[in-house]
Length: 387
Image (cartoon, rainbow, N blue to C red; front, side):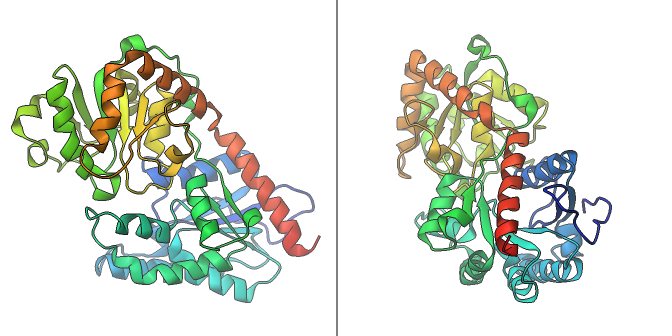
């Protein structure tokens, strides 16, 4: 649990400070993708003078995954609801609830409290969108929470507003009718300050295709398994680097023996140190995801000068194809191979895409994202109070 001093019971007049309660469905751990977002917003808002309390599953659902994943999700929904009910009232201006698991908490808050607090559904991925995207792929098993999507949707519809991390997710939520356009916004995830303003020195880049992420079908790993052997056989001086796939990953379980010497596995890498240098030493980064709400690794790799080949999902869906990235079009074997060959064979194209991609992500800054978020909260609070 991340915690600061208890907020005052009554907020002073004026725009600052906001008293914010954040209930997260993932550990508020900066080393994790979603945890990086939750903890990053909390710390940046605190530095700006706001009061922020963060509760994550360690405190919302004590005991962890005791009865399996399903029981944990039920306990998390109940934990969010109980924490919100006990903690709010006049004490908080805003309650942020991450994830579809907050559906019960949102319903209770909206029924009991009319004027305050502002109830915000924060999303590191709209679960029904993930279900819809995954159901179109034979590589991804039918999500067990399919039956819960309707419950998640009640939370999204009853919240005062939704904040997503990509325009791709936002547009899907608009099409689903979750909120009107002025109450469903996208704020792209910021990057660590150490990733911004790095020199674009591609002379140090090696002939490396880099994948960073967990080894899950939803991340497009079946496409990596089918296509990368073709790429590595065609270009024997190129290598594949698999980062963050975990200690239990063995390349011998996924790739033919003739390409093993061209594959390097790095189970873990710290974002602020080794991972940044690995990005900077690679020429190309791939993100062949079936679903990603944002895809932080894509933006990080671009900031470090990698040319990106990505599925048009999450953040990558907002990039200019053939300018800021190359899209991986389709899920069938050969789609990743088709995106990589032009980047490998055409150095001029690869360098141009790397330069444009680096420029695109320079605006992903924590202070800017938090200023926009606070501005939205102030506007929505005034509207809710009838001011």
